[in-house]
Amino acid sequence: MKEPLHLGFVTTYSRRWPDELPKKRNQEYGNWLEEAFPQVKVVRAGRIGCNAEALEEIVKELKAAAVDVIVMVYGAFTGDDAASYLTEKLGVPIILWAPYEVPFEKNTRLYANALCAMTMNAAALRRLGARYHTVYGSKEDKRAADKIRSLVMAYHTVKAMSDTNLGLLGYRPTAFYNCAFDEGLIRRTFGIRIEETDLKVVFDRMEALPEEAWKADSRKMEETYNMDTLPEGHLENHSRLYLALKEVMKAQNYDFGVIKCWPEMGNLHTTPCAVLGRLADDGVHIGCEGDVDAELTQIAQHYLTGLPTFITDMINIDEDKNVMTFWHCGNAAPSLANPKYELLMRNHPLAGQGTAFWGALKPGPVTIARFCNIDGAYKLFLMKGQAVDMDRYTRGIMANVKVEYPVRKAVERIIGEGVAHHYSLVWADVAEEMKEVCALLQIPVIELGDESC
Image 1 (spheres, rainbow, N blue to C red):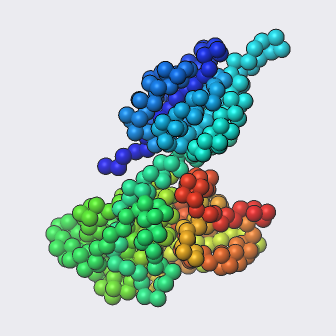
Image 2 (image 1 turned 45 degrees about the vertical axis):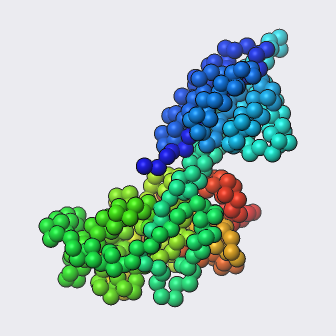
Image 3 (image 1 turned 90 degrees about the vertical axis):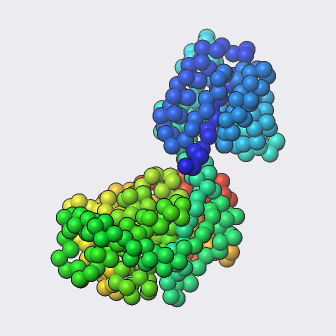
């Protein structure tokens, strides 16, 4: 089981300030963090940091808990000592969070002065070379809350990626040079470990499955999907492969995978598109066509959202509607399908050598991204859009996405930057979180936003 992000939480103030507000904020902001981030372990300091003795005790607590990053909320004005001491002794990044000033009148005193404190503390940390972030605004302010979410989830994602095992099931399809990868660069950049299992292991596992197991799965598929044109034997191969891949991924302790889905699998009439979609809804994420860089993107998006993603080509644009069509052979998770249109299980839409989903994907906000190895270093390609309610207009599975950036310029920019042809789409707006991940990993971002970008 992976170790979650350990998020230290401390409230501070200088003792010459009243302690009612710091006590209140300590309780409320600690509760908010625990509710907002169930996927991380929030380590709340046992006392408020108000003097040297308290800070020493807090450091002992947080060090014992092996915190990865600290959120320091200003209960009231705090000198440079607290943030400086915490970062020096713990050696981890710190997020300085200054809530808004509580209401005051002409003849009453300031009770917090948090903005001033955060400004001076940030300047001190800059001089010390510490890694810090600043957030201004109360937890009720969406801008402040969103920034905290982006930062914490970025740290969560970076830690999770650094403890990820990626399994290669085969290498890459014939002539798909863009799906080649640099294992050392990936390990240095993301911390992801890569191992390989030959496709023969998968085929042998398919053959060894007990008949009752794959037949039960086949019956389930027949009851769920329209597959009246599926060739003889394809459903058996589908069920055998679905069960075998689950077993292989578990046996090899792979957190994610990529598979060489053709030509060998197609030659055996077991092209895995629909299998990959089903597995994604089961929490087993395997990218297609051996594209490791696309899978890196899927990994990051999944850690940020917990959702399945869609690895896809971009095949068409509509300049009048400013819509881009993202299509693939049939590998999307069924949970992403638009319930307004029928989701079919059919033969592969191009090669006719396996099973694939044919249908349209659901409307909603999407983040379009790809980590790209360009000139020996990683960059992130990034766009946001809105998937529209539109049926497919060719065989396979597709999402039609309306974007802000002019689509023809987008195509030219993609080609000009050297971005490869696969993208990962997730049905959530996590563009800011993706950018924070890249900031932590020192990865440049190629972002196509509005036309001014």
